[in-house]
Image (cartoon, rainbow, N blue to C red; front, side, top):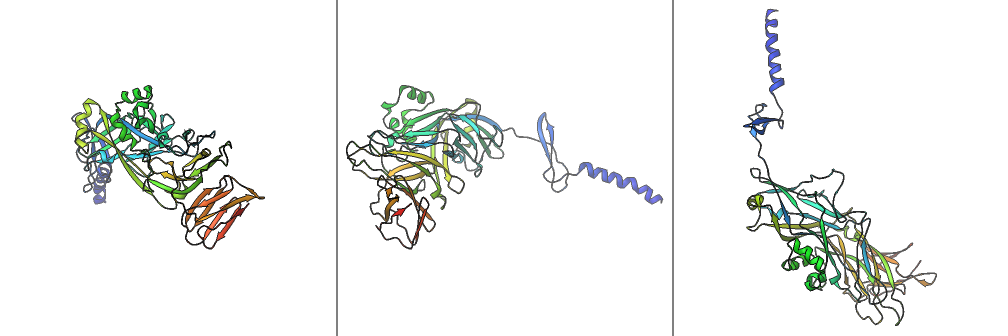
Length: 445
């Protein structure tokens, strides 16, 4: 009994010591060393807290790239007649861009984008009908989109055909960025400063190609933000159609396999036909397409922060590289409404317009269709009357093609379709075992 009685206090003290001194891997304690905040880490071997280590204070500063390209909106085909062409992105569309700046820092530094403003559930408004949020798929990137309740629209030119001088590039002038650098950990984090409303300026491509056409107020706004004529050529690179050429299908411009007719009236004095179509990128999600594009711009840097910036920039000169990138996948649906006023009487140009999807800015671009051989064609009628503007869909394997009828109710496809094809128009569904090039297949609704 004496042995048990004497040993009890010793066991109790040992348990008490363990209860107050032991820690688990990953546990930390705040502390102070030399008047500076510090932290104690749990030693994985002894399960005891180690000595207090002073925390490194991140070097924080701001810089302002001269501009950020928010989006590019492509003008639809125009008309010399009385009809008005336009394309609009409204509710259901979030045209914009996803960008990272990983190429702005040296390889030995890791980069992350921090979302420090607003709640986790809501995007952060920058004004001007745009908002930003942290990318859900890329920890180094942010997404800047048009708000769901706003509308962006551009009208077609008052000439027949397509004139990309009427394309509009939306710039965010001098967006302020907060940078946090941890030298010892080789970490850089960045975020937009949401305390100021964004200064957003839209620019017609024609203005940038011929600066003499810039309105004085627009020119002054650009100069005020350090954007000079030397920058115009770089800004124009965000629109690959700006030089008047039609880029071939590429990693950035994905063909939607969608066409619509662009035809003049039957006789002089007849009204120019106008049709409205609903566009979406549904045909791009059967395959995955990805693209990235770099735009390097000069920056304004706080004087006290300049030396620190030089330590982690990827180049000798202090610049900021916006890397735009998008991957299409199911769930990233974009849509637009396009109204086309056909060309005037006597027009002899291409009569079919192809639609492309711009992965960088999630907008639709238009170009004359280059093919001439019709693989499948026909008419769509109801009670013997031709239907104008009727959507016709052809599905071959996993590939979906879309077109619309002209004023005579005629539709036409140009793409090669292998195997059996399913045709859909309104409530009519028709299966063709094979497609004979040029064969007419009429549909009666």
